[in-house]
Length: 284
Image 1 (cartoon, rainbow, N blue to C red):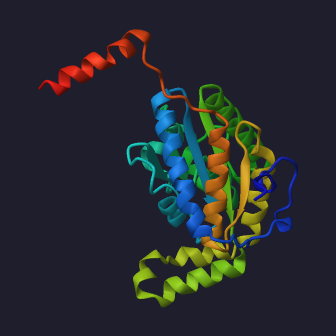
Image 2: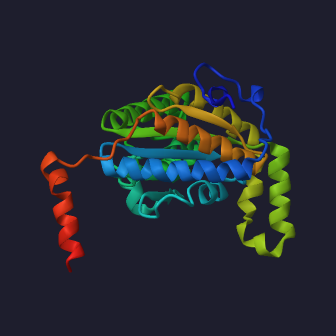
């Protein structure tokens, strides 16, 4: 599987990316990748130098929740922390737009998964600019202040934020789950048709769907402006959930293996005493 084709390295147009790819034996291969992820996290924890931040973005119904459940289920529960970011609280709005994301970052040795991310601040707020008024930014007095330059500057601040994290040992991998409008329709209908899925449906889903083209423009712009070598974006075809999961898992394994995490070794003194320690325990 050519994993590099999913990586955003040059200017892209979303219309050039397929939303559906079917990977053979996806479920079987995912089990193998999950075991590798678990071992990588164990070694990363033991070494204690790096953390990993996995960012997931996508339109409603793109499969973020189920992907997290299936891809990370074999990782030590204490080794992976998932944060699902909703609308900012009153406290969060009293801080800068990155504050609530900064305090949720994974500690060294752990994997952090952001289900929706700091990119909501150049995505949802760009589609609905009036939301920015809740931040009480002194320089923002009207909608006229929320022009393209405002969001370009905000994306540049995100680039600086991620660069700072990378230099301090955070491995950043960002994934856009690229679902088609027709597949979203099918998944929304499923939520309506199955009583057990009704709770997932919101009237807002239909309102946001009407803004599909605007969201696609905003996604394309942020992908082009914020995919950097130390914090790359990957565009994952998401119409087939099983395939999306294995593609993303394989990318995670491939990228994390580059760091060659090493468990710490014992000192020569301790190694020389191992037999004595064993003997003490066996005498009990």
